[in-house]
Image (cartoon, rainbow, N blue to C red; front, side, top):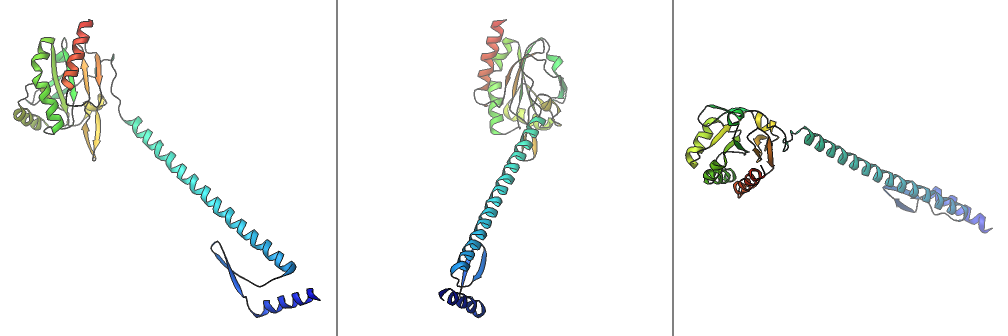
Length: 241
C-alpha cells in the first residue's frame, strides 16, 4: 500500500511541476521529487552526469597542458634555431678571417698589412656611446705600451667613415677605426648583435699574432679595464714564445 502511494505521488508530481532544480557543472537540470527505486535511479543518473563532467573537465585540463607544453617546445626550438643561425666567433688557434675595410681616413686597411705585428682587433657597437668611448680612451691611453710590444690597435664597428672621422677627432684617437657598414666582417668574426632591430657589432676582441693566428678571444667584454687585460695577456703570450 505504501509503495502504491509513493508511485502515485510520483506520478502526480511529474505531471504537476518540477519542485526544484539542481545545478551540475554548467547545466541546470529540473528534477522531480522521487522516492524508492526512482530515487535510486535519479541518484545514479546524477552521479553519471557528474562523473562525465569531471572527466570532460579533466580531459580539457590535460589538453591545455599539452598545448602549453607544445608551445613551450616550439618556442625553445625557434630559440635554438636562431642561435644556431648566428655566426659563431672563431676560436683561438685558428687563422683570423681576412678583411679589407675603409678607415677614418678613407683608405682601405686589410689584415695582411699587419703581418709581422700583433693585432688587437676589437669590435664595438657604436661611435660616441659611453661604453665605446671609454673603451677607445683606454686603448688610446695605453697606446705607448702596445707599441714597444710590436702591437697595433684596430677598432671595427658598423658606423660610416665620416662617423669614425668625427669620433676620432672629438676623442683624440690615433689608431685605426674601420667602417664595416654592411657588417660583413663582424659576421665573419661572429660579432654581431641585434639592438631594437638594428644590426650592430658586438663588443668582442681578438688578439692576433704576427702570423695571423688568433691567440686569444674576448667575448662580451667590459669596456673598463679591458685594455689592461689585453696587455697582460699579450705580455704572457710573448714571454711564452
